[in-house]
Length: 351
Image (tube, rainbow, N blue to C red; front, top):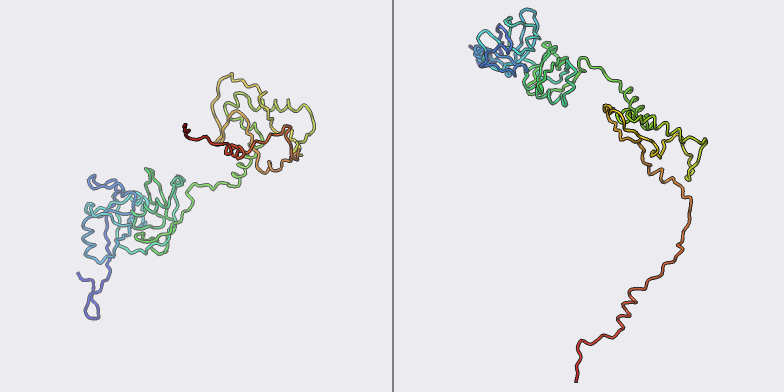
């Protein structure tokens, strides 16, 4: 079988020839247990019989081998590669998502032909569930998954398996855009864009920020705002704080500190030792809001350095002690007096 002749010099010209055959399609789950590969369900490659390999080797088919799959019943089209040539004669085994995309039933007639697709440059996908957002690094996961695919076609809903969870992803757009609506994803730099998952609702960040600010403001100003703890409800902490504040308001008016700042009568009392606490009663369930702890006393924030610097010294000047300290004798004088004393002889001679 010759591909053709050249009009110049009688040489051979490589003219690509197309492979096209009809097969009965079945899902991968229906393959023989000895040859079945369940991981093929989460890829984009099919199984063909050995006779298909024999015909492909006789034809001038470009590599990698890419195929166009057309359902004979409804005319739906998708693309894929080939994983192995181990299927029974007259049969082709497809991943489950590919059967659903083509709308084909087990045993349906399927036309499979060789094709050429451009290398993909861009793809936009859309997860079909908000559960996809639970993946920490979806781009890294997708990069690893696409190694099992040879092509991507618009409107395909592929399936991937990650951490024993099944995710469905729809292909919305591919570039370059051709009449085949598919691209090859083998050995190419593919830019990936994610559309919001189906069912995803964008949160109102302004409202969330406003509620957080209000909660922080309320917690800082009201020491009795921590009444949600079990111990607080058990001893009626909020009520005791209010009663103690009322008892401290016997005198009206405002006072001034030594620093010159007016006192705040509404500030929380510093002396809480007078509060009577009773631990009688049945303990309640601990139910604190997230991020809050209760230790049985109000929160008193420490004063900042700026506030300490503003304190005014009421008394200024230099003080003196009523008792003057006596001067100690200089050690050098003591040593000099010792040096003047005559030294005793080391030995005495007697005549």
